[in-house]
Image 1 (cartoon, rainbow, N blue to C red):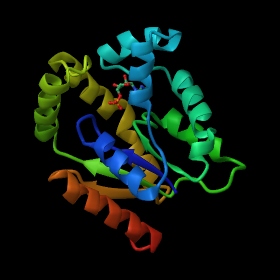
Image 2: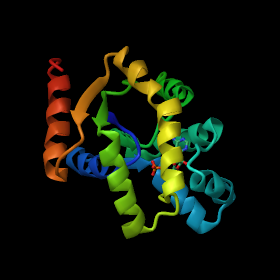
Image 3: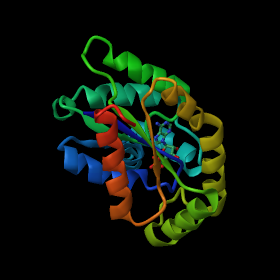
Image 4: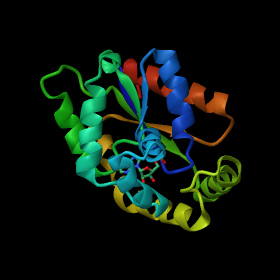
Length: 193
Ligand code: AMP
């Protein structure tokens, strides 16, 4: 099963992607994690990505599409995957469709985690002090939200028009939200959502 967990920064997509991947027995693929590990390894990709991430901007589409093309071709992704953080632009979403051409089924669903902005800000500020993610400073948080609205939010319409979107309320505790995600996916599998 190929699923995208989609949502603004702070919506909990990383947490839900990890839980869902365990449940489905397929890898969770987080482009943010991949980039953070490139940064900590000091690879040439990492060196390029670091400043972009710290500014709250997006790494260029061609870089991300190349990274994803390679990652989903790996053997562990053959039975499916849960994508967390990709696609983030319409261009990435179109490229993702292209990657499935000729290799069977496309995406089963795109789970859209919705969380009101004041709650996002509260969560991101909390994460900033707990995890010390260098892209969780206040200025960067605001820029990431702006970039989300400008570049990523249009994907809601893109996937809704393809009948793939499953809206899930992302407010509540982690287990409760995980149940909603599972129900939304089960509903889609039965063709009722
Ligand atoms: P995340 O952990 O998903 O919030 O990603 C952290 C940061 O990595 C983002 O703010 C972007 O700078 C970068 N990033 C992650 N995924 C992508 C993507 N698909 N396209 C462009 N930039 C990305």
